[in-house]
Image (cartoon, rainbow, N blue to C red; front, side, top):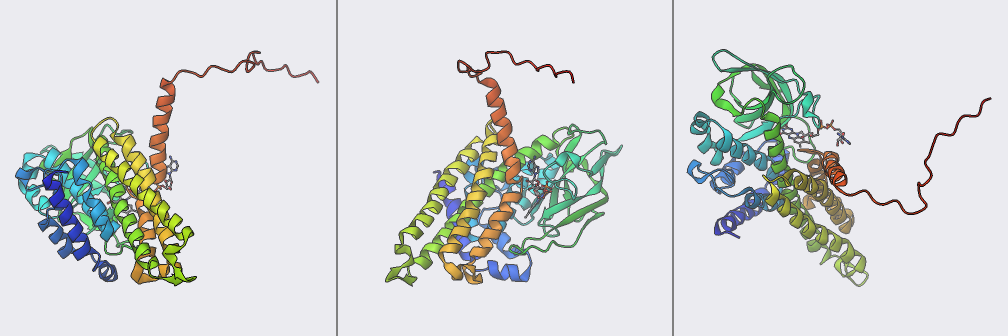
Length: 401
Ligand SMILES: Cc1cc2nc3c(=O)[nH]c(=O)nc-3n(C[C@H](O)[C@H](O)[C@H](O)COP(=O)(O)OP(=O)(O)OC[C@H]3O[C@@H](n4cnc5c(N)ncnc54)[C@H](O)[C@@H]3O)c2cc1C
């Protein structure tokens, strides 16, 4: 492990234990994004993970920086998710943005002074982004005028800039898609009511309405033709980041179950002395080890031809494993597992949320299924065992009535 990664992971661990864990219940009660906490994350170097050092970032490769969410996820999965989206946008802006965009935004984003998020989903299009309605008209002076609405925008009303995917014509397909950074204070940007979510109410999510929003061409992040491909790359990074955060969630659930069951007296011993309980927690521990190996392998594959498939494997397996872990650990505590202070019920709900966001478990299966079909096509046909299918099957003539 590089010295720099070591330092960043230690900072993330400290942020989770000192800032997130002790405060997340209060954040949820207040139903407000903890800006002071994300400011502290910025000061700790957690908001510009993959951005180059000359722009104030950490310059970590994706394969390393993604491990930060494993640490943050021990504090809270939704908080880890929001910072992961900010980091992906910052990476895109610092890597693919125009020089003017970098001059204006890069240092504010890498330092966490300003926050960014991604807006792709629309009310009628989630898993199938090709059906999006948001349109950008490219004006004679190079500016873009954008109209449409996005849904499930995380950090709604809180982020300072939204990396928004748009179509630039009515032609079907993705060849006209682009990504443009829309500042929150651009005239014509507004938000719907904040969604009512049960277990991560500090993360504001809402629809974002774009009415004749005019944005300079300086804000183009991915030009026409690259919007979908670039978004899919961003989503692959997000999928692996979510798997990393889920490992933190599993560790938090397991540690809670261990801390409780080692002291809970029953049948002349402790809960943790029971074989059945050890087996349940043993399965969680194995799933956790497998999940770590899987997301790290997927992180190493990002940017290679294997990246999308590996990201799909990680996103399919790890959030499911996290949900099983949270439920199992709740069961180990018996009734106490349902009480608010232990937070296990919240972990189950977070794991379920992480099964949906940035491509559902089913969409991951679709990606894996397609790869399997491709592999099948490249394999030789199996010889048919003797005695099978030798007689040519012909439709038997229908007997005349
Ligand atoms: C907490 C949270 C935060 C989010 N933040 C953002 C954000 O910041 N920016 C953003 O752009 N989006 C965001 N999203 C949106 C998220 O990415 C979508 O919710 C997700 O892609 C699924 O889309 P959908 O909700 O419209 O479900 P739908 O697409 O309507 O899917 C409904 C069901 O159909 C299933 N399904 C779809 N296709 C298939 C198939 N081919 N085979 C089998 N089953 C299928 C799905 O798996 C799902 O179970 C967020 C979502 C959540 C929950």
